[in-house]
Length: 141
Image 1 (tube, rainbow, N blue to C red):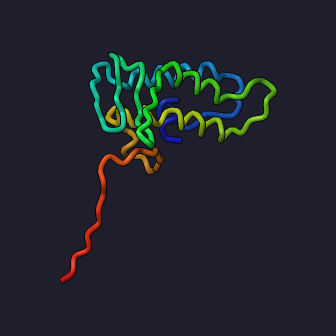
Image 2: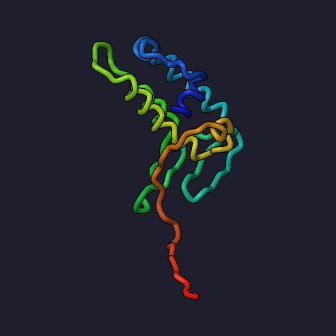
């Protein structure tokens, strides 16, 4: 989970921390994200539009032309809800995956804010709509 590790500050997030310190983890991730996203953004990309200074929301184009607006409040809520309630059964990897998937659109919105990720050996998938037709032509000699 490279984005989570980067915004948490280490690879050492533990199951005990997830059970006991979910508020602190959420606040740390959000604070680190806000520091990374530039204060002067006017990014208009075919996939993402970032609004406000500093950005409070991103608009992500989805399949079928449907746009989804994601706000920092919704991101914070998604991270907080990734953690189980006391006494609730949970999967530690599920917590990490849920947080990572909530963070990925923010990385896509401003990849220059995450230069460390360029050097990391990982892949994450994010569906994007096709913006132009692709045609394949066969040439004969």
